Structure formats: structure tokens, C-alpha cells
Length: 214
Length: 214
DNA sequence: CGGGGATTTGAGCGCATTCAAACGCAGTGG
DNA sequence: CCACTGCGTTTGAATGCGCTCAAATCCCCG
Figure 1 (cartoon, each protein chain N blue to C red):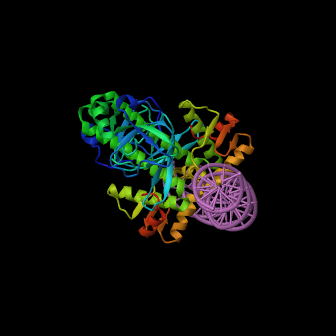
Figure 2: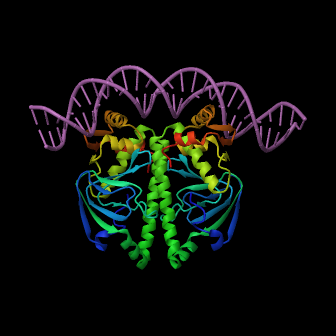
Figure 3: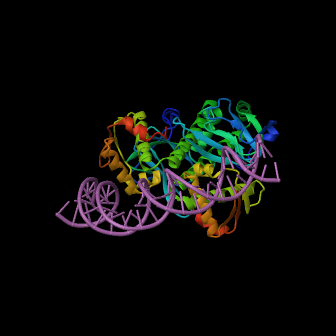
């Protein structure tokens, strides 16, 4: 969700927490806000509306921050679940408030963090509005490779920790369409797919197919 | 984009500005950030990507704030154009920074403002991901009536200041589909449509059709 | 009254969805 | 060790929604 290094929570507060696969890190509507830095493992966040319908709103990788949603409202507006065994560093939000008062730089960094999310969301909305299935999936894979690369992982081979259904929910299409689209990208020689292992064969084509999302 | 009354810019700084129909209030990439309170008239904001493709990202009504995008990046990430003759109050962002240092309440209000936008965007993404044409249009009309009502206007009759193309760009569909969907809502007795005048006949049905977007 | 943009309406098509079935893989218990 | 079970994934076929292309109409504005 955000670049690493902006906040070094490990240096500020050392509350580590292990999270098992499928375990909830925080729930939607949760009152005692916390900010997390993901040390290991991947998370997904989901939004549930009154009608009970739910959508995946994001995937969150090691090295990224998590939980900055709902800082203004005082409640987490999404729920976060670990997609695999994970480890996080925690900073309670009230502690953060105290810290911010002392250091204006932290304040500014915070603003930057929030508006980065706004920009990211807007770019996501643009994609959902303009791109069809193939472009969405291409953008999704491209985004994942880039973010994993930032985290130090290989930029060519990635492992999808989430199900096709989660991907479909995130991209606004059915799980069958996700599967078919991935198959087509493989048939076109853009990707090599073996279950959840994805290898990028033709990065240029992938970028071209995903042109709308940065 | 935000509830009125959170900031009372008129009380802080009195730089008023008139904007003609079609005139640009600020451009995407603009460096000298400003925050605006819309006193009269409606605006639309659009995002343009490298490829030159552009999408409407929001409509902005009298009484709402405009320009808080890109506070962290230092540049406006969208452009704003007046859809009719308008009047705004301006506050340069650097002045705002000074003000914030003095008053912590303003700081907090600011956080709230930014995260409100995040929540709104997320709800928009949810809609784009889960709703089909009819649901999207219903949610759009419902949102507009509510926000106009907050601004003091009638909740039953509204005037669409934007074109079908703008609506389509905003909702992620073609202008023809917007037109057809509005016609269908009229045929079903939910709305009464005369060109750009829209009257809500069956608010309950409209809410039911738009169930996903709060 | 004429011109041009906005809107409506129609016809045909393609893509994504829906429903359905088969397959692969992991975990469990016999 | 192997069958069984459940879940995730793939694949197929048919439907229908929304897009594309096209033309007619409406309306605002000069």
C-alpha cells in the first residue's frame, strides 16, 4: 500500500506479532486503530457493505504499510486477513498521534502517505472504468511484479498467494474470467502459468496491455 | 467531495474567484496547490494518463471542498473544470500549512478530510467492481440527490449539469448506455427525465437498485 | 433560421457472465 | 499406501448485457 522506508516503525515501537494463514489482523469497524508494517507474508483487505456483499480492496506485500485506512474516521473501514503465515510490526494509533505532535516531519510524511493512497485508488478507479478483462489482469500482474521487486523479490517470477476468486473480486470480474484471461495471456506467450506460479515472458507486451494503469 | 462546514475558508482567507463555464480552475500537474470552497456552480475533475486517455473522476457541488488531491505529492493529480459559471473561495496551500502548525484541531480536521476521500474512493471502487449499468446509474443519481440536499437543494428534482459522456466516463460505460439506462429507469417509473432535469419518483426503488453504494 | 453539439434510438456483434461439469491437488482417515 | 473428501481451478456451452457503428432528433445559441 505504501513504499517502505517512509516510516520505520521498527525503530519507533517494537510490538511484533505473528499472524497465521487465514487469521484476521484487524476487522472492519475495529475501533482501536493500529498501523502495521508487514515484515513477512501477504495480506488481503476486504470491504463489506450493509448488504453483506464483500469485495477485495487490496493486496499487501512484505515491506508495505497496512492499516492507515480510517485514520480520520477512527475506525478501520476494511478488514485485513493474512493469506499466508505472516509477521508484522505494530504501532497503536494513539501513540502515533503523540509522536506526530512532536515532529512536524512525521506529520508531513503522514499526509504524503494518505494522499498516496488517494492517488493509488484513483488510478485503480481509472483502470476499472476504462479497461476490459485482459487489460485489468495485465495491470494486476504488472503491479504485483513491480511491488514484489521493490520488496527485493524477483521481477520475473511471482507466486499468487490469493485465489482466482479474490483476484476477480479485486478486479471486478468473475473467477472464470480471471482463469480464462490468464490462459489467454499464456497462449499469447506473454505469461507462463503453472497453478499459482506466474512467470513474465514478454514484459513489453504486458506493459502494452496494461497501458492505463501506471 | 467533502462535507461543508469542516473548513470555513471564508473565515480564514478571502480570496474569491469567479470561474466561467468551461474554464479551468486548476490543471493536472499544477504546482502551486490551492484549496477551494465552492460557493456556487458545479465542477468536474478529470484524470489524464500518459496515453492521453482521460476519465472523469468526480463531480463537485456548491458547499463542497475541492483541490485537496495531491497535498502529499505537491501537485494536483487531476484537473478541475467548471461545468457552469461558478464562484469559489481560495486558500493557497502554503498558507494552510502555516495555519495548521498553529492549530492542532485544523490538523485533525485535515486528516479527517483526506481519509474521507479515501473512504469515498473505496466505495466508488466497490461500486465499479460489483455493479452493472443500472446499479451504477442509480447510485450516481442517488449520490447526487443526497449531496445536493446537503447543500440545501431539493432532494426530489435535480438538474444534471454534466453531459451523458461525462457521466459515462465517470461510471465506466459509454454515453449510449447511460442514455438507455436512464430511459429504462423512466420506463420503470423510478425516475422522470426531461433532458437534464431528473425527478425521483420512487426513492425506495432507486435505493434498492443502488444497494452497494452507501 | 441555420449550425453544431448533445441526446436518443436502432441493429448487430463480441465479450463477460452464468450455469454446469470435469480435473488437480492437499489433507484426512481408513 | 490408497481412497475419500473438499476446495480451487480449468474448460465448455449458452445467454445476455454493454459496446460499436450509424442515423435521426432535439435543443441551445448565435
